[in-house]
Length: 188
Ligand code: DGI
Ligand code: FE
Ligand code: FE
Ligand code: FE
Image (cartoon, rainbow, N blue to C red):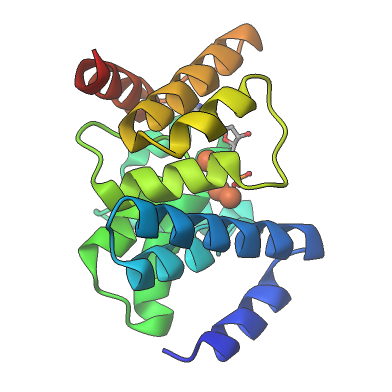
């Protein structure tokens, strides 16, 4: 795959701010891959594509989810913010021929996490959360932890996200709870 062509495609599909976020997530993911001995190439590809469908039309995404057996219809009962990762995991196969299951899964689950996250899942989930442009309460602790313990840093990010959603009286998708519970059991 030609990275320069992909970057032009991303620049067209995303806003300037989202494109810059994508590049920061990519740098962060590559560094995490180096620290925790994961494929830097896979981390780079998954990070570049993770928000590929962020601005696709809701109607189009709804259609894609409803008509594809690989995408759970349960997504449609939850907030549309949860749709762009699963939809992107399909689109990049159609458009760029990416069949690597680890890359597709890391993109699919980047917003919620899941039970039994792979190392690449954790790297993309965490890079999206800690990239230098982010500013959440508790982020310093997650960033410090990310230098030494990938699983614990993901646990803190998952915990913060679930707590934040509950605080705002938002619904919490089951995979977000599965991620929290499973990471909790890995840490403690
Ligand atoms: O695409 P990004 O903005 O880079 O980040 P993201 O894909 O991690 O998150 C998008 C949004 O999804 C964010 O505002 C928080 C929200 N979100 C994460 N988990 C859940 C969720 N929303 C609901 N309703 N339920 C969840 O479990
Ligand atoms: Fe996202
Ligand atoms: Fe995220
Ligand atoms: Fe993102």
